[in-house]
Image (cartoon, rainbow, N blue to C red; front, side, top):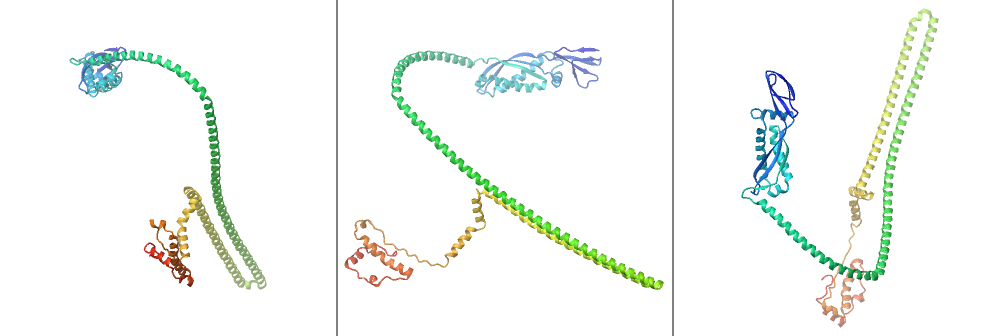
Amino acid sequence: MGYHISDANSYLVVTGGGIPDIRIVKKAWIWPWQKQSTISISPFDFEITLQAMTIEKLQFSLPAVFTIGPEDGPEALRKYAKILTGQNTGSKHPTSTGRSIIEGETRVIVSGMTMEEIFKERQIFKNHVIENVQTELNQFGLKIYNANVKELQDTAGSEYFKFLSRKAHEGASNQAKIDVADACMKGEIGEAEKRGRTKQEISKIDAETAVLETKRKSEKATADAELTTTQTKLNMGINLANIQATREAEARDAELQRNVEVKRAEMELEKLRATDLVHATIQRESAHQEAEAKLFAETKSADGLLYKQQQDAEARLYADTKGADGVLIKQKQDAEAAYYRIAKDAEAKLYAETKAAEAVTKKADASFYRAKRDAEAMIEKAKAYSHMAEVLGGPQGLLQYVMLERGTHEALANANAKAINGLEPKITVWNTGSEGSSGLNDGMGAIRNIMQNLPPLFSTINDQTGIAPPGWLAQMSQNPSQSQLEKSGKGKTKVNGV
């Protein structure tokens, strides 16, 4: 029993009574029924010389130094204390465990790489080894703090790196010889270049003096051309700006026109709404006032009649004394009945007139809502046409769409067809034949064509107008020369396609 304290680089592992598993602490009271041991978290180094083989089946020796140790964390320390402490204390047991894991993972990584990749990408190879080994060491609570891969070495019977070193040495020697020869060549070339450049500079000065004036003229012409180009671009920009401003003004005008139409429709809607509402209110108030006036007049008339009858009854009662009590009562009942009847008639008339006024109001409301729906439909239709005009490229596109939708083109075509329906035009087509190679030197060809065209021409005039040619022209006798022409043209010409 006692109070135990661990060093800065170690922990106390306590087991025994009152502890279900183990407890890892820096200081604790240790009771007689408990046991404690100390574990160190200081990392330790170990060297390995690994015999591995690359993907090309090349064997080499890989010397490396790894620094591993317990990870300073509750869960890692618990794994380390339970697995790697106990009978095998010290650093031999964790070292042998880490060595076996490192050798296995390194051989797996090397077997998937080429010798060139391992040699040139040593840092990537090192990172792969650390990542894979750390994954396996996590189950033991160990951590890799550092890994140093030394120079790769040849195994027994292999001289790969020896030949590679010799190749690099020979390459450096040959490159040095090439550099010396290159320097000598550059010296001789430089001397020759200086002599040639002296002559070139003299010729250049003479040539520059001769072409200076021509160059200035060329620069002036270039400047004039640039000025003309700039002016053309400015004019084009101004024209484009004017066109754009015109298009924007037209678009703005169309938008304002649409807004005006929308506002006009809304004003018409409000005007109809106000007119119908005022008319309905006036009619309802007028009917109500007339009904109240009639009721008041009839009520007053009934009151006056009742009052008169009461006065008469009182007078007769006063005159006839008590003997006229029965008559007075009867008259009084009659007066009350007449008053009740008149009051009921007035109430019935008032109710009927009130219902009539309500019917008029409902009719006015119905007219108002109908006009409102028509106006809203007109507004929505105007909006739809506006959107369609934007989609179709403007009012012209919308006009063409509406004409297509309503069949305007078909109606125009039908109207044109009806306009020419019943006409019977007579069309005559004739062909006098084509001149061949023999007609090029025929001096009588023109006269023959005229004579061939006359018969179909007279026939066409007679068919179209009913006018016949003069008898002297149609009955002219053919002279020998004409007969000879017709005989010479027989088989070469056609009249009316025959």
